[in-house]
Length: 296
Image (tube, rainbow, N blue to C red; front, side, top):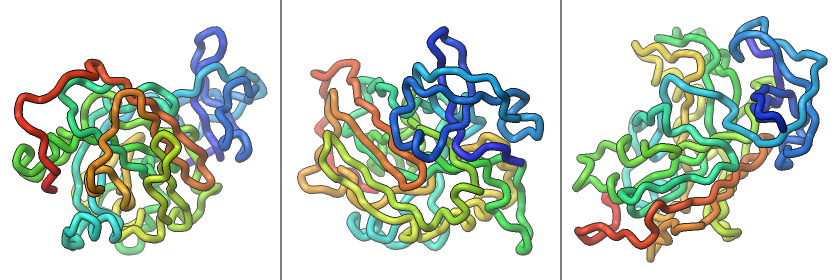
């Protein structure tokens, strides 16, 4: 199903978009200026998606997938994250959806709408599905349906996530345009055979905010996929954000909400690092009603 290891989607100096094969060392850099062999063929999960001898030079790194049918998010999937919010551990994954227009590139500025108050970061391991997946049997391995892994930031407006406004529904607060930057590469399951052995680190303006291992997930990647696919078809290109560790702004006192110009960097071992600057459309705008600490 997968014919790549470290897949990068990029724009060359002439504005043409390619998929190229990066090395593990390339993935740890910003990739700009690197000359990479590019893929030809159909969709990323097609057998005819093959590496060619054609070479192109990276001018701008893009989201590793051009589009997605849907993004599924998992809430409260790290024990320490639930504990910092004084919340009970869920018996099943807490799920919400984000929409295709939330996709953004790994180094893209994130435009913040004037309505997106109490802005927060969530560093996450992201999974991309590579073939149709529905109602898996006990003998099927959910990891066999994965195209690859990448890094995600589940950008969130906690003001709209507050249960007094959302009734416990998270999707709206997380679905503003460009609220799902991904990248910098899509790493195959051959290169990451065990997604439970990765480390996630989040910095804001160089300050460490999150640091955890994916082995601290309440529900591991396989369990999430198995649960999501109960009677629901996960289409190729579906993105799953697997949850964030402790350290988000919402559960700090006082809450260090993201401000205009803040830079969020999220790194996962074996994948690389994304870096996004928050650009407020109106940095002086304030809501008519007072802000409150979120009540998830």
